[in-house]
Image (cartoon, rainbow, N blue to C red; front, top):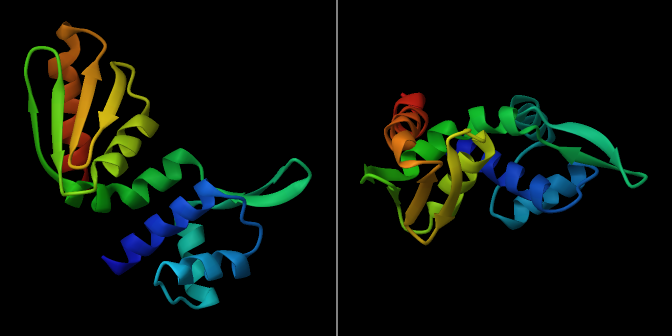
Length: 150
C-alpha cells in the first residue's frame, strides 16, 4: 500500500503545481512523509507515465489521465465502501475523507452517461445523464471501482 500511496502523492503534487526536476519532486514528496531514493522516484514516475512538457516557456512534469488511473485503481477501490442507487441518482459511500479522490477518479474517466459528481467527506453523488441510464452507470461504477481492482 505504501507504493500506491506514494504514487498517489506524486500524482497530486504534479497535478497541483509546476514541478520541473526530480529533486523538487523528491522534496515535495518528503514533505508528505515519503522518503524515496532517486531510483525509486524514477521508477514510480515511469509507472505513472510521467512526462516532461514545455508550458509557458518552462519545463514541467505532467501525467496523462489514463496512465495515472491504472496506478490508482487499487487505492481508489480500497476507499469505496458501497454503491447504492435509486431511479435517478447513484450514491458511492467511501471511507472518511475519500469521496473527493473517488469523485476525481470517476470524473477523469469521462464516462458519457455521467453528467456530474458531487463529493462530500465520505459520500459521492453520481448523476446519470437520464433515468434510463442509471442502471448502466451503476454497472460502470461497480466494474470500475470494485471489480476493476480485483
